[in-house]
Length: 360
Image 1: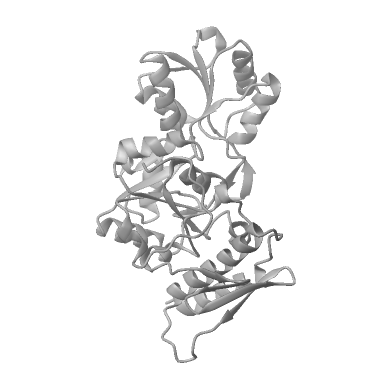
Image 2 (image 1 turned 60 degrees about the vertical axis):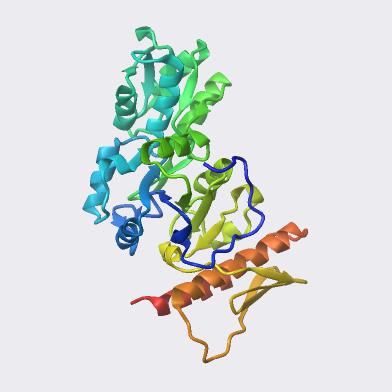
């Protein structure tokens, strides 16, 4: 991995296809590869094309409820080429942290789903369900059946002084019916009862990224995600480049108002951004320009003009990347020079219009 604890002030430049600079793609799942029970449009083909370019592919998820084999099976059902070993979960990362500290055979109070128990077993640990079974530590991960008895048992164990680990602290989890409380909310229940905080393995903490490198390899990773507070902040913490796609949780307005620790290296409307250049964003006085677009902040919102000749040759996906970049660059400059985060709804409509024209 590159140097850790990097923060992003400006969008980076890439003069060729973005994938050309990397040897492993670390893809988040929900919001990047699929949404609910359906693949994101074009995602299966993009994953296949990334492999064809010689990059390793890792599907990296904070969700600890399912074993990698179950996740890979879901991906294959959606048309995404995935082997079991391509999936890396926060359950695997937290199990390694615990195994390194306590060694094989250690009894661990497990509060979570099948994926967490399987990860502990795979690391040679022994999951148990009660404090009376003499565990040496507590680990907590999301499971749809976790309820008050399990949270109470975790609280008793943490209050007794046992080291406490959490797979991740995502406050929400997407479901087929919408957004529901995630593991972070369950962790907060135990934290409130014990006035203690766990050691966390999942994004944005480094352990899950380190686990991915150990399992998949590579020296030049590109982290591809849809959440600023997990995927992008995590990439910045480990010094890896990142691509934020706008197909999931974080929208254009969120990126435009992001503080430096949450800013991506690159941003694109979708995974098509892997296959185009990411041109220079320049600022002159209060005017931001990028590849024929000019943006200023007026009346609290980013306003964009197309400065290209009407006859200029246009590639819709490259256009969309340039437009997103000029909006984000303008907003970051405005915020970094003392302004309030500007609105981006009008610019977002322009992006959607360009993508609609580019659709086959």
